[in-house]
Image 1 (cartoon, rainbow, N blue to C red):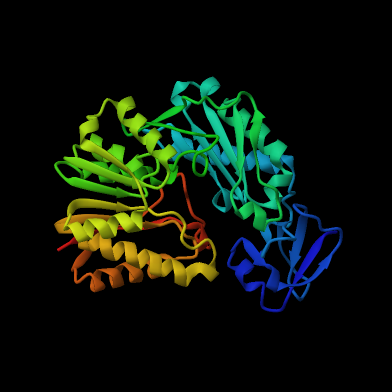
Image 2: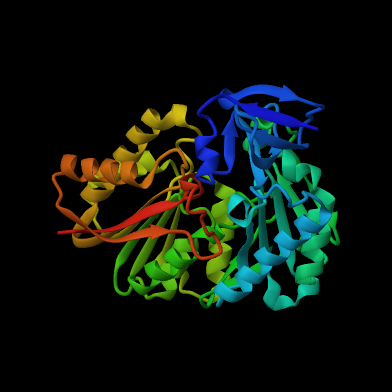
Length: 400
């Protein structure tokens, strides 16, 4: 039997039902434990703790499948969990056909991400996109694909397992068709009345930031007659929401010319007035400083940067970057202006992020009050015992 025996005291996190065990917590490895194989986790006293997927090349050495000693880790378990994930989204997600269908540990499928695009076109023309980000789900890939096709009726499954986390798992970067047809280059989704093109093959993540759906709607609700600045805009998610909400003007900045082309196409797709939208292919940090030097000001600013802290060792550097953009962002806000600011770095917890933003406001000599704490939507549930699952956190602030 494949068994990992933990060091004394290292069982505490599992007893709190946290789903990860780090390499430093393991005393002994017994059996033929290969990447992705199922292992039994036992305490130093020999008692059963959990069944987990083994990742010999990762600092996260084991990811829990089940805390139930009597539950087999098999094809039937995978099918049950995929079915439960799909049922949850049907219950909780509406007014969109861009959905996070599986969200890793929260759906008890650790390391698996699945997004579902274009269901309003009919299941046959929709698109499932998967990321297998851990050795365990990599081993169950075929079973997962079969279950997804069965539960959704969508025959088209594309793999985007090209995130850096794969390398930390000792897995190669892989993309390509797993089932059905190649992704439609004209694939679009509709969210709260706004249409967006989705580049499944080459876009960020799986092609679209489904996690910001509720926050895009809020930006749209608050944009009427405001001058809006959207930083790190990608394909214009917040920009399109602001235009639909009646923004007076929207300036959007990103360093990807290809993403900006899709953003401009999105304006045309929705029939919005292109004269209200300005797209800048530029460095956000430099652009913000230039706006400050010119005395520019805005009524609503969105700061949604990429992951500045991919791991805990990058926290200090990331904190400085977050502070700089929020400091200048505060300075660019008119009195009464709104700042939507985000971090998608799992290593930056919500408390630290708020401290960083508060420090930026202080250094900007700006009084700011928090109107709302922001996060991903209900298709990104979190395990109560797994705070690392709350990777996206944000604040809506008002300059007073």
